[in-house]
Length: 341
Image (cartoon, rainbow, N blue to C red; front, side, top):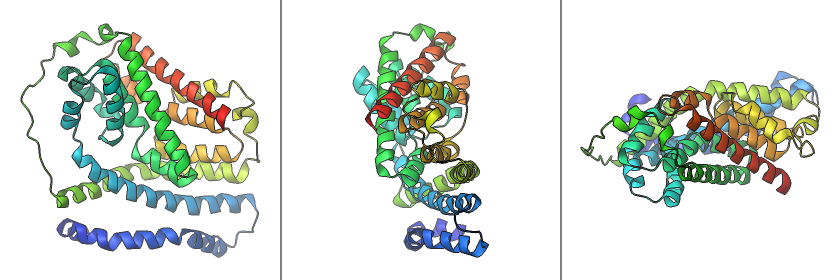
């Protein structure tokens, strides 16, 4: 199979895409068949938990595979070097908008936070613009969007993307206006930028499709255990937690639920694959949309490993400003959605 993909990537797409469509269309029938085959009694809590898992797990994995493949191809057009050049020379607010949008499609992980930060600073990109990128890249990634689309629908997925962009743009703009360059570690400014331009590559269509396959192998290969674990926890909540149980803890009437959810979420660490299925189950049990979105954004957007890594280049006052500004933005979003929805 691997040899066939390498020799004929276009042919592989032509074969696998129809199979994906057929399998996705049959998911409900397959899930019902599995439940019938187990002999579990209808209406029991265990049955509903198992039904949730056997339907949601393959559905989300299929959606994730397709979108990661597509995003893997798109990302071949946005290398980190090209991103730096696109952001260079932009004004603060315009740069914040462009950086936040580029953060969605640019390859990024917590381990690359420091080299990306240094590279942006060396290029002369404003600090606020850099933070817009660092906020948007982990928060609004393809895994989160796919899971939200698969579990909640396109409206919620779009809502998440738009609010995530607003937070990244606004937080970056505020940080930029605060003139906090003095809180960047001195050694960062002492590094001389490498002025030699890296040779721009122009991958062929074959190479771009291969990048899509590589992205699936890398990303889906890394997140599937977290995804299944999150869906398993969500299945337990779906089957065993009474209806509206979460309303008293995370409902609209609990005014304190949004800031508490953010305070709990900030020190936690999970990726989108692990947290979103749990959020789905919480909403089913009466938690409000604003509170659950705030909790999810704080867990994904304020990654503890990323914050610890950034300490290598940022002094503590700027770390606190970064976390505080983003957290306040998330809390405001939570209250707005609790009020509107």
